[in-house]
Image (cartoon, rainbow, N blue to C red; front, side, top):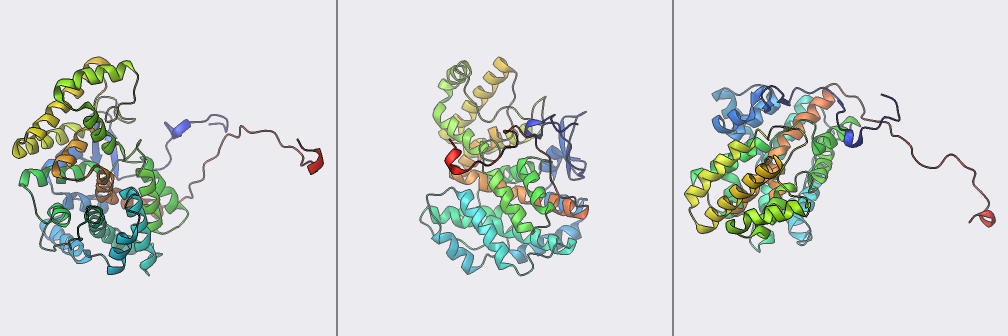
Length: 379
């Protein structure tokens, strides 16, 4: 490819090799280490999937027990970090708080520059254990409540609910959340993952790579889309208004969040699994609000498919699911980080295992070289 043949947005550019995940074209299915993500989400807990992403194979019972024990030992953020969270601007987006907190973790870790496989794994597990507590503490502080410490007797998803609300909800709610963790965990060279790999390629530390990835994920065209979906549903207001709202939005050529995907051409393979978990959660919750959100989502989905043959992506069912779980809309993207830390750190380790500095070319379209004139001759 010549220097002048620009691939805007790097569309279609193959930047490196990866063995972490792939959307299989013959099945249109996202796979982690060769396993279909929908199978992992329904047959495994998120802890098993995290182990798989980092260790390339699903764990045995003994391996999973050891992994869970290691993660639980890492739970518990420092008093200094809790103080920092309380000092930060409560009007800033929670992703800003999370980005700052991860950077703080990096400067506090004297092993931050140890990029050996063992060192990377230890820091990955530490972030996996402590990022949920950062997100939960910030969630509670913003709501005028004291943070709740991690409970080492609880599983990963149960512990997150405990730290946010002081209680663990119905099993169907926990399962829906756990499924979302698996479905959000990894997605090849997406914008935030590529950001993390680019930073790592300069031989910077893993905390810097993750901090950069958080900044990338914050954008509404990436991780922020699940928040935008819920704001859209609030604007729609009711199921009886859903079809008209969608038709009016399409006529006005509005940007409708939660639909379409740059990779999937036949629909996002993650959506049926998340939608089914969302429906089961709605049935258990059983409130008028829950039923209304479900029906509204169903009508919007059907109308978009009928009118444009464009299918929903994972953010479409996940946004209202998180809302019904009790999470504030601005925390949706930090919850995405709670999951995606697994994929990011796996890619950092993969990048460093056979590193090449990421340094693409650019196509210069500015003025030709020129002389600097004396100041009196300018203008």
